[in-house]
Length: 234
Length: 200
Image (cartoon, rainbow over all chains, first blue to last red; front, side):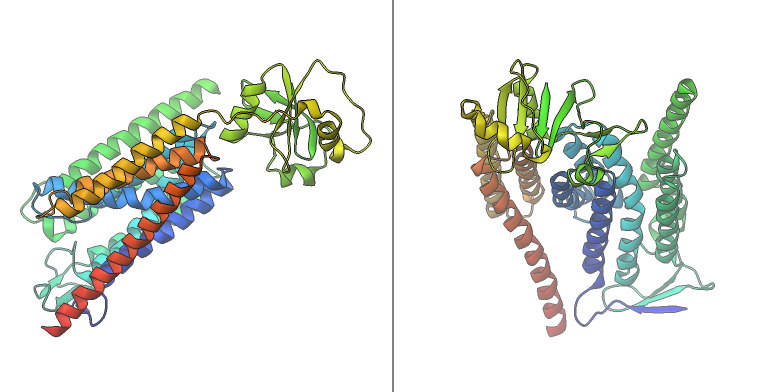
């Protein structure tokens, strides 16, 4: 059993991990963009725009889904913000292949950002798993969270998405459909792991899972269209 | 049309692909220094940035263009007889010095457009600050942040499309300052929350 007391003496690790996840993700995305010959100033401006848009849309989605009741950070909103930032930068600087390259690198980096941010959720006590007393269960205690023994869904998400990121980075040059596979597997992993969350209790399917299904369908459709296009060219 | 791309003279320009094509025989080290890439056929090419593209289009197709670090790009009518040089590195500089009538300062097009975009960006910034002040129950927080984002996007457009625009440079500096202040404000809020909890 892992014991986590959420009464932190100094700084809550949640915002620290969110900032760290965005910082690491943006740096990796900058390196990938520069390696793919995206200009230095364009890559730099994207580093400034992407975290702001990610945070804004993360807040916006939670605000909308809560009916204007509270603010929170939604990972799917953050994903939308990152993609929109890449799209906007590619539209401002319409050089050949910029859109494809920026979106590709954003897709590769998103699992890493999500993986690190889940460590913040683990330590902060949010997005936790269903009641569970088996191996590797987590016991939360502290004045900010109810005492509970739950499934370690956040470490599971961290591990799964880190593996997806590492595989994506190593396989992207060898297989032409790697980026779309990263997109599909990320959506699938989030869909499946959502069943193990406390927030999913008494629900057949959550709003997050519906969005993940839409992303899955989009990923499969584009993969199929790409495959057909390559078959015609061959 | 020929392009004298800094220390690489006699480059040609392929309009359909938007490539500056280096002549055969140019030293690879020099080409790599200027971010040229080699394609599968062995040709070295570079995609011009937005500013370079605008300069090239201004001279297309009747002028050769000389890019230099020391002066603004020079436009030379390409009906002129070519001058023979022994040292290719000094070719572009020699053309500049021997033909002072070609020292045309190209207009930086779109200056007024850049200024208009900057004014809109500045108005959006002011609107966002107003929304933060007026907001009593956080109802204008998201629109305020959205306005800052839009302002930032417009400023980036100006910095990329009109990099010489001074208004854009100043506005970009203001945005970087806001970005840093936002991060400091976030840290301040976190620390205050911790102090409140500790004092309870």
